Image (cartoon, rainbow, N blue to C red; front, side, top):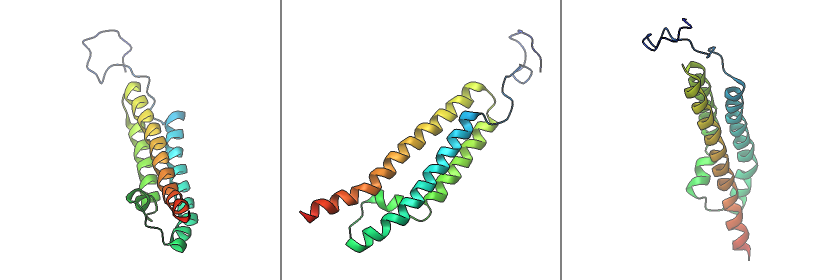
Amino acid sequence: MCDSDNPYLAPIARSSTFSGVPSLRGTVSCLLWYALAGGIWFGRSQMVPIYEDFDVRLPLVTRFVIHPLSPLVLAIIGCGFLMVTTMARTQKYHRRIQIISIVATIGLAAVAAFGFFLPLVVMIESLN
């Protein structure tokens, strides 16, 4: 790589501060996806028997969250984000992908919590 300030150099010849390894933020975003997958797997094992005992009609969000493959899909998405951030050429793109990954993880965690607790609220209201 060339450290010249020449604006006419080819993009490949320009210097880059990216080292090709995932940063701490990239690793944390991947671990968040794995933690979300583990939380959904654990929550599924705890909540499905309750839903079956009370014969609760499950909304679409809950059926998606308690589907047996949803934790696996989330783990694969986490691996995908880690690979994309590792292969990113520029720091700007690298940071954007990591921030998108973290925001998407937090958003899906909120949807999963909503999906787990919505049937419980409906069940509690039906007991009155």
